[in-house]
Image (cartoon, rainbow over all chains, first blue to last red; front, side, top):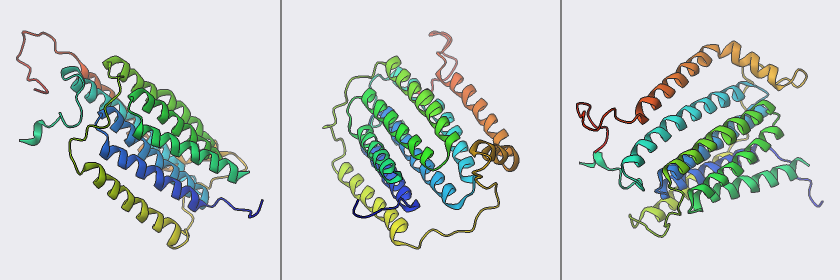
Amino acid sequence: MIVALEVTTSWYLALGAALFTIGAVGLLIRRNPLVMFMCVELMLNAVNLTFVALSHHLGDVSGQTVVFFVLVVAAAEVVVGLGIIVAILRRKPGATADDIAYLKG
Amino acid sequence: MELFVFIVAAAVILTGALGVVLRSNPVHAALSLVQTLFGVAVLFVAQEAHFLAAVQVIVYAGAIVVLFLFVIMLLGVDRADDLRVEPLKVQRPAALVVGACGLGALLAAVLVGNPITGAHGQGEPNAEGEGNVNALARSLFGDYVFAFEVTALLLVIAVIGTLLLTRRPPRADADDEPELLP
């Protein structure tokens, strides 16, 4: 061991930033609606990681409570979103995000 | 030891996240998502959020990813996408530029900016003696009990809405109901 590195809260925040960026880029470049949804989950997890890191840093459990609510909202979002995706793909099998442009005018 | 845990978990998380974005098969992407979620759960344990680590594994890996896989199998879309198709020419370079700028801004704010200070909150302390679950329960059912009740309402509305949304039309000939989609 040359240097005794210490894992600080900033490391967790940097990892959360990297995870959020990967999720955002994936949301922008993928066209399969299911995979786009998974990228949204990645971004939510990045925010959860940030909340937990700051909760640990500040010694306040409220951050973990917020993560709990984020989990609930993510579950509701997945239920509704997958329902919409099922309704769309049942009518147009193999539809991608480019095919769902009915509001384009 | 904590450094070792962090490095391994970060490698697991980032390879899983890249797998979600880069794997062409949606099933493989879902399994990479499980990998990422487990890595995040390990970091939750490292940050003494034991209850959230368990909930992360149960709710995310146990319910949400299973729902993803269920929809993939139900709709039969488990064939690989052709990732070389690029309908908008500038989309991927623009997305990479936006991502690089965002990551740079976030990392600059985190690493170069002021160290994290911030006053300690008014909420329950993350008590080490009595355990994480007790502190979280006192916060959730004390300070945030109204928000907790509202999430129950949210879940009920989501379930009912999904039932109405994915219901098949009653009859093919009874076309008095407007079609949701053309």
